[in-house]
Image (cartoon, one colour):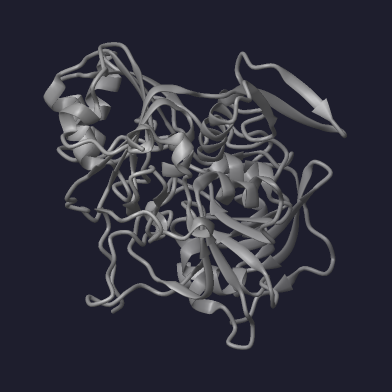
Length: 218
Length: 232
């Protein structure tokens, strides 16, 4: 079975370490916050200018001056700090964020990522995504392995305009966890009950299948 | 001491000197921390041909979106403009020019502009459409693109509290781009919720020192919420 959105978030959360500063993008990455292990202290960075994003507010604590990068109302946790956008992106562009999780339309064997623009449709803008992929060492891309029509999103070369060049090393799809090395995807883990054959068929870019591929458990 | 008293009494005075074809830098992220009354005054004045630099362009009928209604904006420099149907219409019809700029690069362009730095190198955008036509230089084995900084004829800023010297503090994440815009305007206008007596704001807690600020006005704010989200 392909992973659910919740399972994808759970799998990403296994990459967290105690003491990490983490930036979570919109969509599946946001759900990762629900799976931070109770014995870990992890600080979430929101690029509009909040380090230490807390849970959503109640009606009585709702504050229009307190939002996250997805423009949702949030709270600040104990130990949080608030700052301007240049300071916020100094954290991101200066490589101070330990883990960045974001979605994408396509990734390719060279570690290129396309996530912000589909020519011919409305271009909404890249927001902070180009800064995040250029600034972070440790990035996990979360995406479905193939489109609804079955077209692979793991490509020899991205077809859409790039968000960043040569910056992606880790991809979690609904079918597999893969790493990108030396111009190829390396299959590391399969989703429970998903065959290696299915992943091979749905991966358009060069795929290496080592002998020790694990099956994820939940 | 009136020389350092930045207070003005009316919004008309606050934007005195704003004319057609000027560049206006605006603070705010989404609808959070936007100078909503100064935007309304730009609309009232009817100036046209503006270049507006702001992370976003409001929504239909609120924030910078209201300046689209009478086509007062010629060019928008922003990182994300996806919340606005009229924006889409004007962009597709060619009435509006847009320069999409990565959010961190946009913040740094304002910071550098305010600090007298004309340009800077950044890895952000290298190898993407943003890099087209820009100088590329390698430092320590990594490629960077040259980005030029931004200054404006006016900066419009939303603060929380200020004193008459123009020292400003911001509230929570309504800070965002506001302190950066404040440094980069030839004329910087700050609207706040409250003007306090000098000394009430401690010197060590000031976000924007008064040297960057030309005019301060007190206003009342709707503070519209774009995505109201509460715990289940």
